Image 1 (cartoon, rainbow, N blue to C red):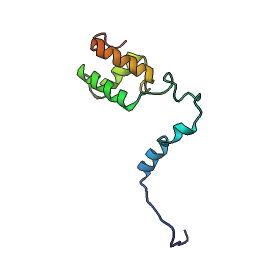
Image 2 (image 1 turned 135 degrees about the vertical axis):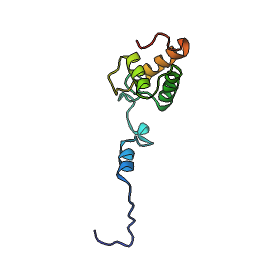
Image 3 (image 1 turned 180 degrees about the vertical axis):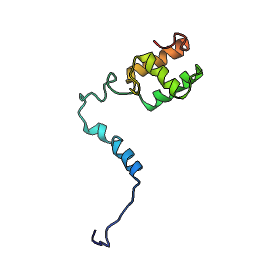
Image 4 (image 1 turned 90 degrees about the vertical axis):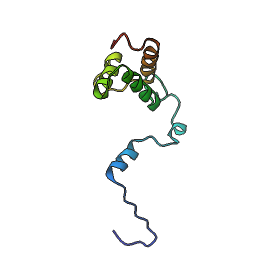
Length: 106
């Protein structure tokens, strides 16, 4: 690479670069058309707040780590590693808040 005294070289660790490349740009929602499905709660996956709340509710049932994740997947009929949609997460949160998860995995 030729020397350029006006150039700025920044080293970014590969892991951080990969994380940055998978994140949605901050202004992307303003650029995409309204009907592309990403704002559709039936297709969009759970939010970070929903994920945290669901795990907290499931932890109260005595489930930890992979067992907690498995409980959520089983309760929603998901495949292993599949994330719930916003609607699915919302319904499970309501169920766990209302009956404390006494029904177990559906």
